[in-house]
Image (tube, rainbow, N blue to C red; front, side):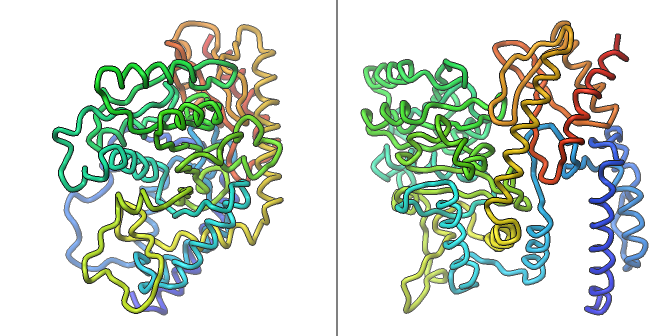
Length: 465
């Protein structure tokens, strides 16, 4: 392909993209294909000769698109959104076009310097103190792993990377039973082990970590010679939106001299709205590490996750490695690859710059406020449906419910809803029972699209009887 052909097809794909997004409400939300159906349409061996772009695009539409679940669909109520506001998509096109590997300041000064400013813009938007700095990661999983590795190194006197973990004792990490599975995986990868991730029961209307039980678990571990290393709290956990009381967690952490990390991957975006901070954000200024995903509720094209650090030095002491070929001569600069696990880095800050400038913080706040309001409205309509039960009350725009019947009935309803195609939901487990999970968060959804959900749920439920 030459650059004239690139220009032609770039325009074609841009027009295709606009038409695709405008037509999303008419498509089923979840892919309706059977396992293996897409692969069966692909050649078993690669082509030796070049093929025309017309044919490639035609096959893309014919083979690939029927197998895509539409994450930007206005009736995507499953998981959490991976939003893609149009300005951030345009920024991502520019990032792809320039195709820079932004691992060091010198490999693209603008990428490094814009990243520093964008992290600070978001720090201000979330009302974090000025001492916080940070870095853009690919996902919250990477930020959490970085924090767990830092906890490990701090607890071993920064000798784990050098010596390995033999004879270091059982390092212990503490969190609530409602944390995301990425916390478990981080403990696996960091060599701490699943048995040393201590999950504390929750209490109260927001299903917060029981601070008294946390304190007791840490003390008991110390008494038998184990080594507490850190505490991971959550604001807006994935399952039911569980949110820890941050000030209570920090009180225990400070008593025990433990490193703290806050997973606010989804709900952190809502903290740009002052009225949502209250109980969700009180005490946040004491956490050593905080992560939230602009690629979820804020609208940045995936992937784009921000990790704030009250003091970056412990994480730098954990992750920084600087062979001669990566050194920058003659200048004191920030190299963000020293703050993260991957060496290679995309120019993710550009997406945030385009996004915030295009909508302004107030425009982004309005969307989040609407989603919370509409989520509560849907909850009230389902509550009023005979036989249905609200299991966990709305936390921001997320709640869970059950239809009449046992756990198998819940799964039948979820499967039937997703096969129907008008909306997309997922199931979860809470206190040993299967629940149906509902959240509002797609960037461009409207009240009309959201309020279709309780109508569809009732329709499909009746059809199952």
